[in-house]
Structures are given as C-alpha cells and as structure tokens.
Image 1 (cartoon, protein in one colour):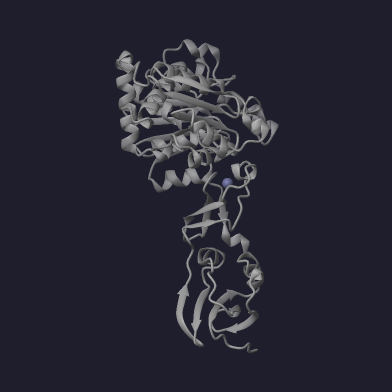
Image 2 (cartoon, chains in turn brown, cyan):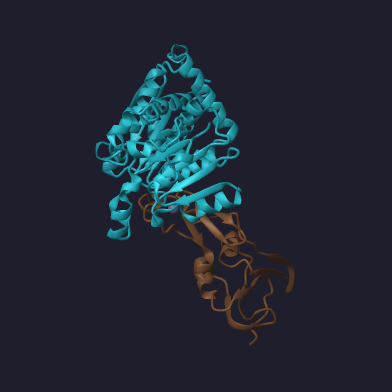
Length: 143
Length: 303
Ligand SMILES: [Zn+2]
C-alpha cells in the first residue's frame, strides 16, 4: 500500500502494530483540520508489522506523551518532500494529564482540576509513580 | 521556603541538625519560649487526630506563637466542597505555617503546591507521616545516643504499618543498623522495603514470634496486629499472644532495651509493662512535641 508522500508535515513511524488509533485519540489528532493518514499493519524489517501515521502539517506534537505511549516510535519531520529531522523518542521524566492515578485513596480521585502528574521511577522497567500518592503505574501493562 | 511532606525530604545532615536543635530546646526551653512571638500555626485537620493536633499546638504555644484551625472536615469549609488547593491558598493569608492532616494520599503535596507559607504534612491517609518518624528518631537519639550499630526490632503489622516503613527507611540511612522483623507471615514488610534492605546490604531477620527475637534487641518498636488482618482463624489463635508484649517477654529482653510505640495503644502492650523502666512510649510522645518545636523553628527560618 502506498499513500501519497507528505510534502510538508510529520511521519510518525514504528508505532507498535495496532496502537495507532489509540495514539491518534490520545494526542487529539481527531481535532486536526489537516489531512491525516493512518496505515495499519505495514511491513517492517525490525518488528514484522508496524503502524504509521502521516500528518500533512507541522503541528506541535506532545513528544513526551508520545514517548510515554511508545518510546520506540520515531517522528520524521518532512519539508519539501524530504526528511529534515528524525526524532528518536524516549521515556520522558514526567508526564502530565496522559494517564490518571488508579489509587482510589489518592487526592486526585476527589479533588478535580488537579494536573495528573507522573514521574519516571524506573527507566529500565518503565515504571512511573503518581506525583501525589506514589502509586506505581506500569506502562507495559497498558500494551 | 521549605515544606515537609515525606520523611525523606530532609537529608541525613538536615535530620541530624533538627535533632541537635531539639536537644538544645530540651536543655533550655525558656530560651525558646518567645522565638515565635506574633507567629501563627494553622492546624488543618480534615480528619480527627487529637494526639497529633495537640502535639503541634503545644509545640507552637511553647514557642510563644498562636494557633488556629479546625479538627475535622465537617467543621471546615471542606464540608461545603472547598478544595484542598483553595483552602491552602486562603489559610496562607492568615497563618505563617500550616500543619495539615487529610484522609487522602498526596493531599499535603497539593496544599504545598498552592500555599505561600510552609506546609507540614501531619498525615495523608496511609501515605506519609513525617513528624511521627522524626519523633521516633529523636526518641532513639535521646535514649540511645546514636543510631549506629543498633539492633532494631519491629513487631506487629509490618505490611500495612506506615510508621514502620518510614522508620525502616530512615534508619537505613545510618550505619550498621540491624533489623529483626517480627510478624505473622501474611503481614511481613512489603517487597519494596525488603528490596531496600537487601540492596543496602542491611542485616535483617524475619521471625514469627516475639519471644524468639526479643533478647537480641536494643529497641523494640511495637505496633498493633488487627484480628481481621489474619488470613485464617487458626493462625490468629496460634500467633496472637506472640504480638502482645507482657512482663514475661520483658524478662527475656536486655536490661537497656527500650520499648517504643506510636500510640494509641490498644492491647498489644499489657498495662503491666508501663511501669517497667524500659517502657518509653509516653516519653516518646513528649519528644514528639520537642521535635515539632524544632521543625517549626527550622521551617519558619527562626533558627
Ligand atoms: Zn495518585
């Protein structure tokens, strides 16, 4: 399958197969006016199958949120039909308002309007902890 | 401006300085009786804890300051739906320092983010209670002189007991401390505490019965085991007496061992032990007031 190549915009590559719609939703791409192509189950040399998203605009992506969702993703920035920058993602130190604390005893469960902040506690294991109650969030269980 | 949310917010050096300040207050309380003249402490207790609140209020009064606040959520603006964030902002206009207790974990973190005066966490659910840990440290410092080389026994519910977890973490910052952990199998310390002990290279032994370990202890820190925490009735009947400290078990202990307890005690220490000179839990409550005096002085930057 071949979708028109992007002239100016972003290509989000190496998304784990099957997760593109979730990322589309969490990053709020449904609210964009520009052309967005989602390619599911593309062939990949590295992982066999992958998803790809092409966005025909240089929007401001929340790279921390994206890195949290899947640190293996690469974001290619396209201008004049060529890649001008390749961004390798990594797990961010802090994520805000991407996940919510599951601890029913946490202050965030009763006080609305608080930012939901998590800090990276263990990069190797991908474990984040709630900035308020320290409850662990294991991101591997999301996948 | 500093807050105290978790016991680990203070470095070892800062903790030692705080204990040294408490020593100076104990040696000459009069010299500190006007240090906080004109200052106000707000005690915001969204759940009742009379003991902790009175300890804070006594500490501020002995420094010459004044106190205001509330002692339960239904007598406060929280009953009308005001958030912790807003309460912290408003109270910052009236007081120079805040001590807050709240049933939800992380509530003090929220208050500290919005307050414009120092916030002391006086307990946030089952999460942190740093002034209890400081109380325990001052008591050990006063009665044992040093933390190094001590054998610390912790007995009771080691799984859910937050005071126990905080004390272990705090003691792990000193040298050559050895732990004897006495609990039923289902109430042993959680994995993250055990991992800290292993990775820190601390010697620790887990035993089921207090009478098997008490003779090696320099400190015995008692907590309550609730019947409903046991998985089965059989274990409860077999083990329940092992977690009650009485005169018989005290006979097995060293002559200079000290018995501590965060209080309130229910039945885990028999009343007959109170008269034993090694029973130090009421003295511990007194040290709780002194360490809070030192903390208020430090956070108000008076000392
Ligand atoms: Zn939380």
